[in-house]
Length: 224
Image (tube, rainbow, N blue to C red; front, side, top):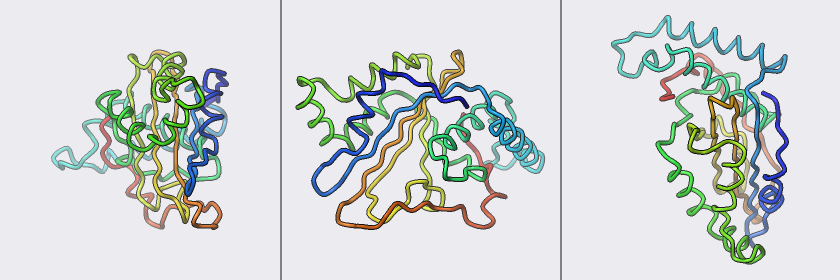
């Protein structure tokens, strides 16, 4: 995946980079990537493809939890690989090679993202409006995301890890979420990561690591 620099993201990223909300701090970031593999990405992509095919070969179509129905489709496997590679660029110090596929969720519509922003960034939205002539943070984000990725043409995914697969696992963390907007036609992914930390804890950022034995269960059903 190749990082794409887009100035429309700058104002939102600067605002959410380290937003002081009293007892807590918001950290948010929008990024764009092309689905063009670098050398490292290419090797990981081939490795993930082999793991998926190996898993499918051992799976049974009669098993209701089997991912065969979705991951047997090459385009679905490519989507999963793009999402994993994007995560790797979003969090370069974290190893996602054994990420579990069922931790990705395909969102049915834009409303789910809107609800997440309204729920978790309500205080941030008020601060944004106060310093940006009353404009809406969500509307501003929608505008710049659409400018880069064309939202109506996108599939939207979220990554909802357990504690072992959370790249922002840290003492004092209150919540976190990760969204992906994938435009197949443009071969481009826009990611939005956001998390909140408590100032009541002075502990530094901790990186979680996958537990032993997780890799063999990495490829579980995912609705792509």
